[in-house]
Image (cartoon, rainbow, N blue to C red; front, side, top):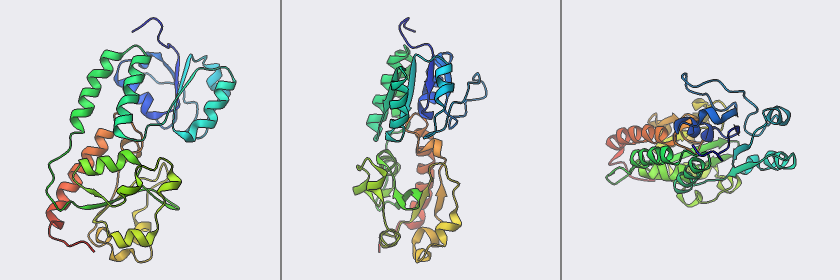
Amino acid sequence: MKATAPQRIVCLAAEAADWLWRIGAWDQVVGITAFFTPPAEAAAKPKVGGFSSVRFEEIAGLRPDLVVAFSDVQADPLAELMRRGLAVLGTNQRTLAETEATLRVLGRLVGHEAEAETQLTQFRERLAPVAAEAPRPRVYFEEWNEPLISGIGWVGELIERAGGEDIFAELRTNRAASERVVSPEEVCRRDPQIILACWCGRPFNAEQIRARRGWTQISAVRGGGIFEIPAENVLQPGFRLVYGYEQMKALFARASTLTKNEPAI
């Protein structure tokens, strides 16, 4: 570890906390977000806020030499921390390539570059695309339910790498959630064979999806193809995306054998 590396880091981003643990920098972390649950073998750290909620006085009391956050949602808290004189790093990755670059930067910043490269090699290998046969199952990923928001960039990439067809692929390059709003009618028209959902911290309710007007005709609803993927495995753009990807691969492989000859509507 470099002597100049930060020694008192607060992670307001769960994927950053997870990454620092994986690359051996956990002893440099002094505070974390409530959205990260450390592994059993990791020392406990104070929780100093959620995602959009930040306890500024508690963070200041930890005397951090770096605060790490993620996404435009945390822009205002980061600005306030800067006004209080703290050093901050805000990342806003939206693709798998940006995620890998962010993890590399974090490894270099905390003085664990070699360990980060070892983990990144595993990250790339485990995210290798499958050799899927056509036709691929049509997949709708729901990031939020009021209004309906389709998957962010890296989610669409994972779907396609895992052997599925992202039915809203044209929207995934839109970086803001407000630019990925879709109508229930359009979801019906595109007729997904698999629905994956993760509602950004809100409890998932498959029955609510099944009860939507007109959705009983959707292939995924008729065929029992509605699945939840844990938020930490799909909506936190860090190493744990490999776990969400592995779940997708298993689901799509099973679905492709059942829907291979089903025509699209």
